[in-house]
Length: 421
Ligand code: UD1
Image (cartoon, rainbow, N blue to C red):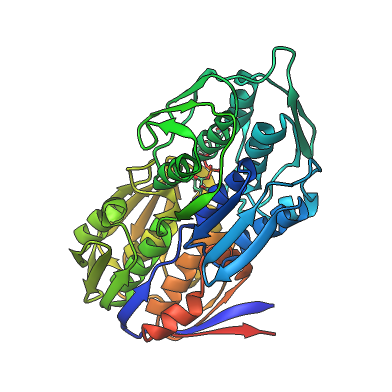
């Protein structure tokens, strides 16, 4: 079993460079399936979800060349129509983007249902609704989704999402890009990676407008050609380092960020007592580790991200007073880590969608298990701030989304080791 061993209590100081955004990468790499030509993608994070996705694409016949660290050249000109390898598909969540991408490219797709972080029931009915509106016939079994061209052919359409869904917005954008006619997605998600995907596709010749607002328009084109594109920095990785410094105390320059994307996170950490200086593409965070209570409600972008819920919860466990943390995207997300934090001395009462967190001056080291990616990151922060030694088990979840986490934290002065038994 591989685990992190963390001796807590060190201040974090120095500079950390944020990697390319996981959630943008896992949308942009399948988007290369739409392109006949070479896509040179920069700022690709070296994380396990990306490696799995590249394996799936290679198995479909994509030519993949790692040009340099973080630079991947993909050529999907001659990919085959075969079914994506189900074992690989089931290893990650965002493999469902293969449905939209293959539907666009081949007018059919036969994709296993995805796996990945299981912190809540994660339906895909809005993706399916979108595919059907675009003219696809959909056959769902327990394990597979099979998409075929319906009797009236595939075409653009107007789709109003019943819930704001990142995944459905991405999948419909992918599916509609190469279809005739115009597609309009209403009540679309506005996350930075939606904009990044649109920018990638437009760079390759697509006609997508409105990404970043709640109405995205896609005017279908016949083909896309190759080009070069750099993925945006990871908002959540950056937020995790900011929260870590807020919790442990210290002074860190977080480089390669888009400060605007970070406002929803820094505004809350600032209320808790951390200090921030924004530069063009960096943020300095300073904290004496003495935090105040606050109230946070997760929301779709530009609200406070659900993917930062667990990390800010750790800050709340160390803050003076009683904080309230309400989850409005994935209600069961607290169960992935709150009991682990309790074993470290945290005082958290879950009341429906809200966690009531009574802060204490210290957490104490313990052996804890990551149950999903962000929960695992939160346990690492807790370990960094705690007295004594913390063992974080199940770290394959964490390595799904954080590039060189141990190396980056050690460079900031943390005492963390990756141990393989
Ligand atoms: C994406 C992110 C994930 C983040 C989440 C919310 C990626 C690869 N993953 O996940 O890190 O936690 O956004 O910001 O970008 N829903 C439905 N039906 C659907 C789709 C979603 O009811 O067909 C619901 C979900 O249950 C959830 C809400 O909509 O309550 C938002 O989910 P969604 O935005 O789709 O999340 P993901 O795309 O899976």
